[in-house]
Amino acid sequence: MRLAQFSPAMTQAPSAIVLSLLNSVPVQSWTFDSEDVIRIGRATDNHVVLFSAVVSRHHAELRWHEENGWQLFNISPNGTYVDGAAVKETIVVDAMVIRLATSGPKIKIKVAIDTSAMFSTSS
Image 1 (tube, rainbow, N blue to C red):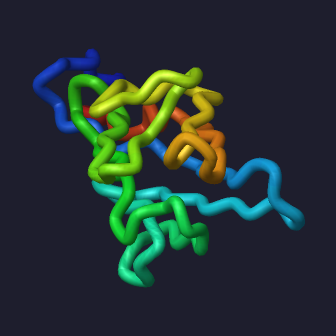
Image 2: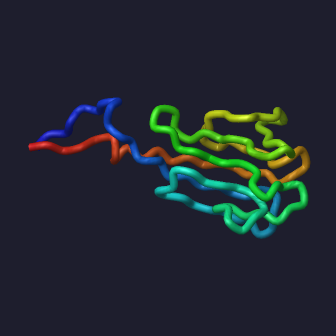
């Protein structure tokens, strides 16, 4: 039995992702293993619900893209910030910290790459 070579044409499953709320007691975290889209906001239909006046009902989304990995999209008029700069969309990097609105909560994003879906076995 041998491992097949990785091919860009193979479908890659979303990598596991962990979101951690910073500057909050107690620190709160959410782990997602198989979601393609993760919604963040104040409304209860989001995956990550944050009760803050500056967080929009539907504030930001993390979306899995097979070629680029996780991407962050701002969907709020209050803005989403990375390193103090407003972003409309950006590629997520491991240990990235985002801020919802200029004075809102900070969330650290931890990405774990899942390579198991990139290889298949054949006999």
